[in-house]
Length: 130
Image (tube, rainbow, N blue to C red; front, side):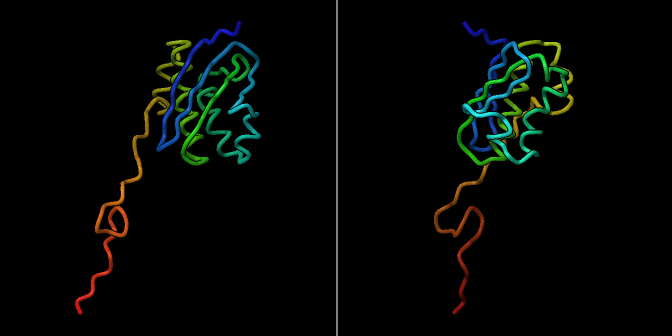
């Protein structure tokens, strides 16, 4: 039976990531694919790994992530947030290093909704005097 050391939920914009931290040798699986395969752009893969680097856990734990919603960047940030929360749950000693780097803070900025009588959230329809 597989035992999870920590479980964390990360959110960013409309992306939600469930992260499971397990004992292992450093494999990261996102939606059944390897990290580099799911996030082919190195920037996003690096972003997901940041909490592991901050806590020196890169080669000690395996990570399983299920992520849905949003775009690629939002999903990567949701994975980072969830991973930081899961690592914190696994070992409370990581809290200060993760908090100081800002990985535990939920970025609550969302897209503002479109209002009726307007072209977008804030943009009005063109005004014609005549």
